[in-house]
Length: 269
Image (cartoon, rainbow, N blue to C red):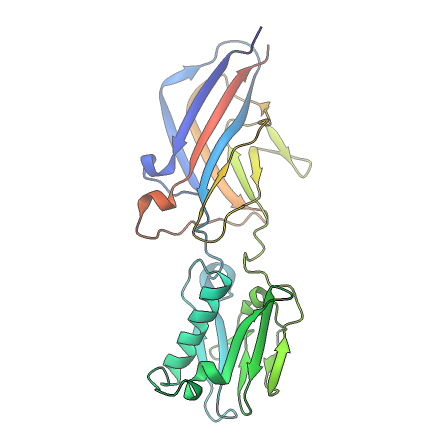
């Protein structure tokens, strides 16, 4: 005899709520009756649009630099956003050229981005830096005495780089900003996380590049006890593996900032 099943589908966009935390009222309530029930996520659809660069959230958006042996020192702040390795380099280049008024130089060699060159180091898939004489850049400082953790994203050291020539950054690049997994919580789940009672219902390893969609669809959904046999609300919260809010970013297309979750309820006894 098969298990009795119920299914609940939720969409943050349909609810017009943030993609990392949304609540649906179930009206009329879903009455499961007597007996034990379990719950699992059979499908979760997310967009990789959470910011990896954010001054407010991560303090990793700034750097300081000079192209004239320190006679003029500039400080730059990257806009919060979802950056790939390529778009991160492009944005840093644009900011350096704008601040030094070299963006309209006809000769590319006169632009700041040709004097301070950040590029991808193909053998390690990390980053490397080339400096002309008299140039310097520091990814750990910003403004007047401020600090930045941009160096962690790039795999650089927290120092002022000022030696002419090329250097490969010594650490592994962290373009995802330490987001190794997403944790999905549901108020109906009676589960555990790190040995503690929790409402976690799924842990997802994001398998999509920045800006792309990812569908989590386990072959064998992992059921945990359902803590309520009369369901009036369903609440979903998503954090990263460090417990930080995900803060999905809109890109002008509401659908691209939506999370959809399909829950399965199973009668066990």
